[in-house]
Amino acid sequence: MSEWLASYENVVALVLLNGILGIAAYLMLIVNRFSLATGGLMAIGAYVSVLATMNFGVPFALTLVLGGVTAAVMALLLGAPVLRIEGDYFALATLAFTEIVRIIALNWESVTGGALGIVGIPTETQIWQLALALAALTAAVFAVHRSAAGRVLAAIRGDEMAAAAIGIDVARARLLTFVASGAICGVAGAFAGHLNFFIGPSDFGMIRSIDAIVYAVFGGLGGVLGPVVGALVYTVLPEMLRFSAQAREILLSLVIILAVLFMPRGLISLNLPLRRWLPRRRGQRGKLAAGQGVAAE
Amino acid sequence: MTALLEISHVAKRFNGVVALDGVSARVGRATITAVIGPNGSGKTSLLNVVTGFYEADRGSVRFNGTEIAGRPPHWIARLGLARTFQHIRLFEGFSVFDNVHVAAERRGTSHARRRAEQALEVVGLAAVGRQQADALPYGHKRRLEIARALATEPEILILDEPAAGMNATEKIELGELLFTIRDLGKTILLVEHDMDLVMGISDYVIALNFGCTLAAGAPAAVRQDPQVIEAYLGRPEAADA
Image 1: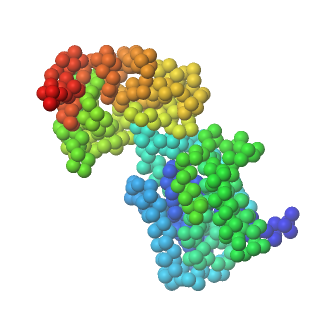
Image 2: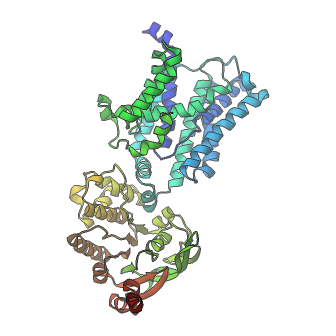
Image 3: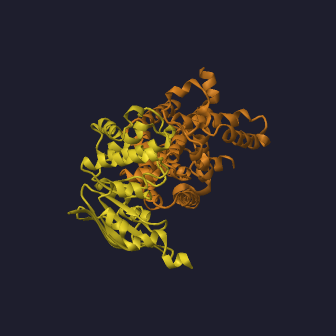
């Protein structure tokens, strides 16, 4: 067991980390918003926490909090003006945000090390910490789903106008969700920053944002286990396809296309024993349409 | 009659098309007021302005003396104005009970379940609470929308064509339901095409045409109003030509 874990440690860590990112993307998708900010918010969490470790010797646990809080504040500043506009523009604005963060990280050499990144980071992140964080996050989102706040989110997903008509402040609920999603991305970034010895601008680009959406849509938006299962399969699959480096991307994309065609409600819609752990409400075909566009790319 | 809702000189344009051209109306407490008019006369636009879904270009809407024009829909809903929609908008994937429960929770989570059950009882859907709302027959979906609105404990219930798509029996039952709701002390403002229903249940009728108020008053008086007759049937000369 321990040998197996040692040889696959990096894959296990990635599965857990991607599960966390998948949940961050899932939270925005269930309030009908397509956020491409995941990569940018994660970068902010990573750089802030790594710089706190390297320059000020801040304890690791505290750098996680710092990363989460900074990314949450950024989400608030970005979301407050942008979430009021129509859905498509929100996607574009978050895309621009992630790009801007990457370009700043690339060019602000005195702080971020530019293209060379930051090296010699103490590898504080442990598998058990990631597992604990993912478990706690999953449990928290599950609890939210069953609460009055969860019913508000489900109502917004069900029909925004009707939600407003019963007194739900849709814009505020979305903004709070985006801030929560930002905090999760920030903590994930802090973990990712301390996972290897190195971080660089290309670690947190647009592909991170798109991958996170793929985990959520591929796994299914019917419950919080969807993105976790999606992250597991979509992270392990490339490892299994290593036999053919060239065909790997094509095979992966094919899997995604087939998945959205034949499992529009995601992997968790398969009749697995997992299913009874999901909330009563399951994902709907129409609501996934936005996700399918990117997943099929 | 003290007006619960007072609409004054409300105007709304869409890219040069006049939807409302200075409409004024008063809705009395614990009455049933109907807004009638031909297609495109501005009825739904008026409801959308009152409930905050459209922002009026000018004019004022006062509810209990509070200016609500230009406020967002959720704010207006919390003040005590609840509405239904012309095209039914239920929460997708929710059970009948959950649709009403989430609305009842807007007035606090304590006893929300009981208040949701009461709202379902008023509309006669208490027995099917566990069913998926999507699976309800059409007339019941309309009733469910009314129950959801009632669960927010509004002072005024605003209904956009509640009888649309209903058969004759369902319309009669709807009329009885609206009387029941009014007798609970609620005020009802509705837009409706079905003249028999409107004339049968309304205390007050407002007729609109081309975004203007044509006539307002008791149902019998509005029905006899020459301008209203003309708007619905056309001018006699025009028919001859």
